[in-house]
Amino acid sequence: MIEWEEERVIQQNIEKVWSLFADANIRKIMPQVKKHELIEKTEQETGAKHMQTFREGKRTESYVVETLAYEDQPEKKHKQIFFTIAKAFEVDLCFTLIKLSDNETKFIYSGCNQGRNFIGKAMMKMASNKSNLKTVEDFLDRVEQEALKV
Image 1 (cartoon, rainbow, N blue to C red):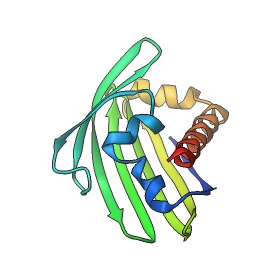
Image 2 (cartoon, rainbow, N blue to C red):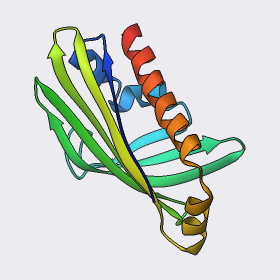
Image 3 (cartoon, helix red, strand yellow):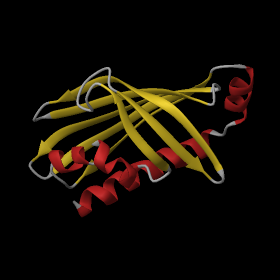
Image 4 (tube, rainbow, N blue to C red):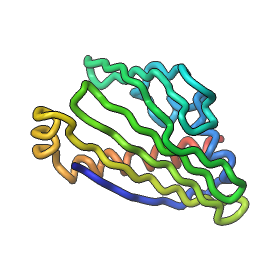
């Protein structure tokens, strides 16, 4: 299993940063997502489900993303999602925003990836922590860059 929790202070209003996690904007911060379609409930509630298609290189995977937690308060925003890729990996991600001031937001990105079957577990053991940390840092960078454009 690979776990992480990283944070960054973004010089932008919490509502503007939060808007990047809305369905309409998800591809701005997750460009590998080629399709993100609501299939159950609404995007602003726990239990919502989306059919998502992800492309990495020439490989494309489709899976259902479930929202496990959703909080939208003036001082704090939080969304937790869970999905299984290729029946091999379980992915649990949390996005938390905390208002520090009118134009300053703390972004906390945490999660874990774990193998679900023999192949997934073997691939997790071979994965490098350095590579995973780079992926996490790249995501933080992308969220910050897009937030500054809003």
